[in-house]
Length: 461
Image 1: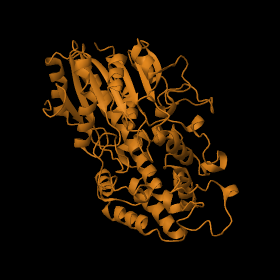
Image 2 (image 1 turned 60 degrees about the vertical axis):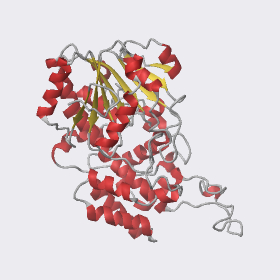
Image 3 (image 1 turned 120 degrees about the horizontal axis):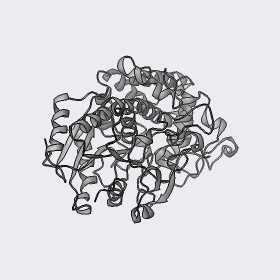
């Protein structure tokens, strides 16, 4: 079962479907082999927005590569979790080969259309929806005037992601509800699509060829010779400039729902089964982006009494920074969706965050705000203001509202030792800092310092 193409050995992959189901025979063989190979520390990594198994495997190979040299005496085994997710092609991982669409150099204009790679990812993530995906692509390409085409676009996006999922996924609707998203789907779909897309367009606006960005009605210029196309002036937000982002955020909620299900229904029970077969194995969970959400929900799926998870490391976690809180600062009657689950870890829960993560610093709180309230985010906060206090993400500013949470820089964490338990926020901006629009440094995690942090969190020596 080991993967010979990997940079480390022994390595196994654990493959889940969208509902968190796994091949039972493969799962049981993996658990038995971990025990037979004499593994003491098992590092289990869950990816975020990767389109297929090969992309996930490449990520794991690069991330795990420094570990054998860093902990030469340790008996380490490695598991890569593969789950059906997708990544938009305009979010390249630093140091990974860029897609043809991302490498054309046309930047913001290109990302507002549906390139072939993203279309393929959508079809893989939402099988049987080719007609819907094709029509969405045509609308993004043609950008027809008027509100009616935008409303059609909104209806198509909603139908694509099936925001009110039937079947087993409905069992986990409370997960989304507890994070401010109504059970019948994000309320951004209840508002006029044109208004929602305008707000996303404002949030995504960047200076174009020396042109200042229009930032609200007070800045609107008078018409004149200095404001025409191709000259220095102001760029008005076109709703179609935000339509691509609406599609991205809609798929975001579908994948968010899926990550929680895979963690709770799939990975958590697997760790419990492993504990029964090989109780001496120490498990260390690692997750990037939605993978951070997946491994955190695995804690909720652990059988009672299982204490084999010795550390959790979240790399730019794409879920609420209040997830582990017993009480929310803006609503003392409510707690986070993972309230108290950090206590299922027999060691620290380490949360890496970076101010250079634009996906989590800007788009995550904006989308979360719009998902939980049909009124526009700009109405309450204003463009460019800090949305993160109520709607922020783990990977932007760390675990919030959990008493006793420690905070340190990456350098301080590596100088160690890390706390033996509880939540620890690690400012990783010293290395997690590269990446272009719209995600910023969200996927800039391939650094030996972060591999060292995983080992330090688990006291793997």
